[in-house]
Amino acid sequence: MPVIEVADLVKEFRRPKQQHGSFAAVRTLLTREYTVKRAVDGVSFRIEPGEMVGYLGPNGAGKSTTIKMLTGILVPTSGTVQVAGTTPWRDRARNARQIGVVFGQRSQLWWDLPLRESLWLIGRLYDVPADRFAQKQKQFAELLDLGPFLDTPVRQLSLGQRMRGDLAAAMLYDPSILYLDEPTVGLDVVAKERIRTFVGRLNRESGTTVVLTTHDLDDVEELCDRIVLIDHGKVAYDGDVDELKARYAPHRELVVQTDHLEGVEGAEVVRREEGKVWLRFDPSVTPPAELVAAVLARHRVTDLSIVEPELESVIHRIYADRR
Amino acid sequence: MKAHLACARMEFRVALTYRSSYLSTFVMMLLQIYLLTVVWSAFYDGREEMDGIPLATMTAYATLSTLQYTLVNPWRSSPIEQRVREGKVAVDLLRPIGFPGQMLSGQVGWVSASVPVLLVALPFALLIGAGSAPASVAAGFAYPLALLGALLVSQLLGLLLGMVAFWTLEVSGALMAYRFVAQFFSGALVPLWFMPGPVRAAAQWLPFQATAYTPAAIYLGQAEGTGILAALGVQCAWVVVLGALAALVWSRARQRVLSQGG
Image 1 (cartoon, chains in turn purple, red):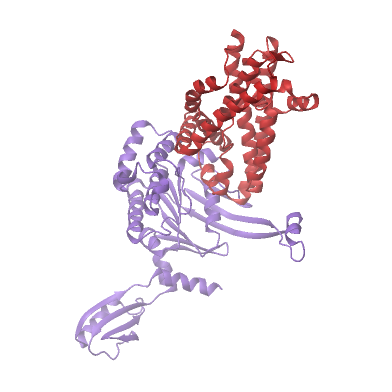
Image 2: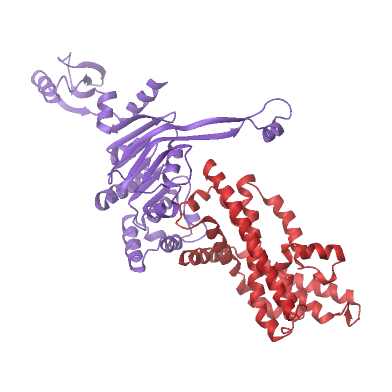
């Protein structure tokens, strides 16, 4: 049974048509003409409990609009969404209790008050029993290292600290689904890693279903097994990360450090530099083990490694193909 | 209910973090009481009473209505405008309790932050102005009810005004105009009994008098017996009307949020 089921989801935005010429601003204000923009155009997917799905797409592809419909903030123009048996925008209160949401760009914490106060309020809002709350707060304080800034007003926190606070706030009432909308935007490497570790752990230990939108593909490679790629409001790819790589970037590279190498059967020399040679091969045609054996049999090799294609270049190619 | 009380407590704490505005409220309030007392004394010009209103009642009215006004109409009339501008409405909509309820309870918490100021200010106010005991036992009992009514009417008006932000994003200009009109017609500066006929009639038909004049008039015995009941009844009627209006406006505003995104 899928926990999130999205079918033929469409969202159109209507904006007054921009007028040009004299008194353009006034005429725009008074106009009855509208331009319609389809931000989400017939998106369908299903997510099983415990999955971690990367929801990817370039800016303006409709990612955030979809997340807003999944969380119940927006009503779709047409189509259906079921999240654990509820329609988010109709049954907002019930849906709210089963989801945690982190927006990288806006915080749910109280700016003027210490982080501890925001967590307390969330405990109250979601009816978390006192003992459970104490236990959760202690657990998150350890996992996310909140201790040093629990009593600092949120406006004085660094971005990384604030995001950790927001994550704790979103998971305090044990929701079974977590939406992360660009959770690592603007963070340094250490802060990013900390957030990824925490989310990975939630998924492994509590079976939390995670839907993640991001522009940082390292987030996806580290956390997600599956990605849904959207572009111009439509699903461009839905499936395994590995399969996507196999389909769009079937080649791998063997990097050999050697003094002399002319060529090897089943691979193509693509680059030479400072005693290193890059050999490109298709693992389905030339098994890596055979290639390595062939190279080692004929050459004196000081080092060698196999390079996996990066997701980023794969996604670049998909976007490029569609334009 | 627990969730709403928690919202109120949060905003109470937030209000306390704004120390300078907190102190300036205190100073402004004392200054206003002092000036009104001076003006009314000069206006009476040695006479004992005017239109049947003794000077002591008048200065007591000035003190009381200023104290009440500070409590019931805080400088932040609604948190909505700010939350719309900062895009925090999206977060509010993710909560398991309704948006107007969150805003109203938060605002009640915000208002209650000025109770300590009032308690500190009261002796000073009595010193520079003039205080008096409630006019009767009935007035003493009816006053807290009228004050609660004043708070509800004032906060529902603030909620309605705040929700305008969903259409215009910016309400500070309208807010200035509103403040002026609301304060004048509430009777906080000039009591309704001294207003000339047509102005007084307008004040009586507007909701603002319920936010300041009604409780003060009850306390000072200007409304007595069935008059107290009638005044409380009018407040109740305004709470019902404004509550219904707020619900209606919210249902429209929500559609707007839902189609535009927080």
